[in-house]
Image 1 (spheres, rainbow, N blue to C red):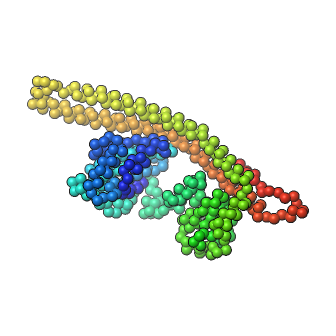
Image 2: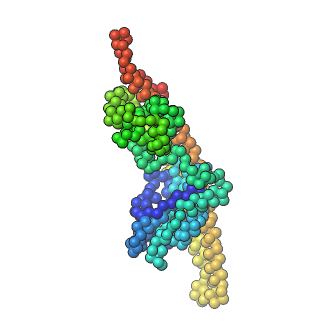
Length: 423
């Protein structure tokens, strides 16, 4: 599985993020080891309190465990990966918390260790942890028989569709998936061999080339948001300039924004709002289905947990009753029979814990199959929405071109831009 780790601070913020059930279908705390608290917020607060006796600021090490998209990891998979990771990093026996997330038909986990060695009262150094995690990730893929992704096979070859947090946030403000935006820029770049060709290719997707404030190349969307060409194509500024030449002939950002505002009519903006509203309504039945599924799955898990808790209590009582009390108990301790009984009780308890874990994993696997089937419906609808947005961008371009043309009004009746959408 893919392992991504970082040293960090902010115990409360991290706990809030890990226990966020708004953006995840299901959140469960798999393990809390080495803490007095039985809640994640309290556990991470303990980490913070201990770190106050040191000069360490980044007192936690956070690790995400991401299995392949076609594999549903079990609790044991995550526990074993966490054990191997802490051995590689030198964090063995350190207090740790493991939280499992399920989202969009996928299951992944987060592990948080305390870096503070309480015996030495100093932070544990983690040299070259990225390389160690990369090597362990490759070993996990090979051990499980999973196909190695290109990034691991080639020592970190970056996918051309990766994007930064800044790009993601900017794209979310626009309301489009950032992967879709970045793909549009990269496809326009590949299709063109000059500034004019690139400009036309961008306009086909609803973006307009301009000269940035620092004389670099940028593009504006129909809402006037600015996108750096180098950033969104994943290229260096030198590579962009080599193909596009000088941006001096292009209009400035303000001029381009004014041009877009003057040419995109209120009716076209109405179409943009309409398609966004329609796509939101299209999603509602699936979102309702998802909410109902999550609720049903939660109820099933709660029932299983309640049943397991009751059975565990009953079995614990039975095991406890095996030990005699009074004079018989004293005789059993002297004869060694009590020790034998306790050993058998511990063995039975471990077997019961494994049985309960397998039951939980089985339920999760079955529920994840249902969730993945629903996720396929989401993907199908999103692909259709992406096609709608592409057609909308084409309509915007045609509308702008219509504004640019100056027909002979004396011979032809003046007509407005073609605002029809081929949906």
